[in-house]
Length: 215
Image 1 (tube, rainbow, N blue to C red):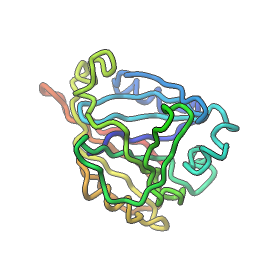
Image 2: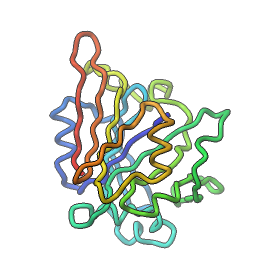
Image 3: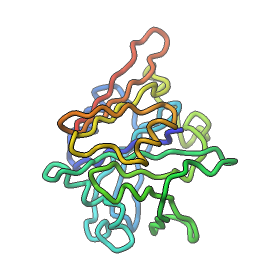
Image 4: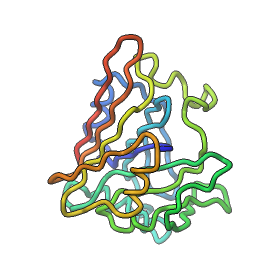
């Protein structure tokens, strides 16, 4: 299953205002000590959208963090890099996808814990891809963590994900496997540039919402 999708943004970028204009309700914000990033997250029934920005360049470029490519991806406006990331999750009884990974142990995780990051993401033209430490969708989280999700706005689960990739950066093996194996499936059309589209289920007579973030 897809756990969440993230997009690197500028700290004062338009994306947060865009979410507000679409009627989305902020679920939580977090600081990632030692990683040099902060985020704002919007939870849907089955996954969440994370807007992420670099607020400490030195930390993001440190030896422990640099391989993630987060700093490089934060320069998407002036570089041919992908500013998006995909996290998949596996039920607690399973080990996840057979994707070559490396162990990422940022300072904010408990000692001895690491995140399995896809090696294909070493190429910043690919999205950052990793297995989430979590094994449950937001709908199963404790209420004090997930709140009302987006149901107060008449929105349920993300039904479709489309990650458009440039013709000069074809999907890697890891990305192709994630797209084909996880739910919701990820369409990978190839155009001239990156973009991310989420189709979110409308409830109680509301039309589905199409959320688009250019790359």
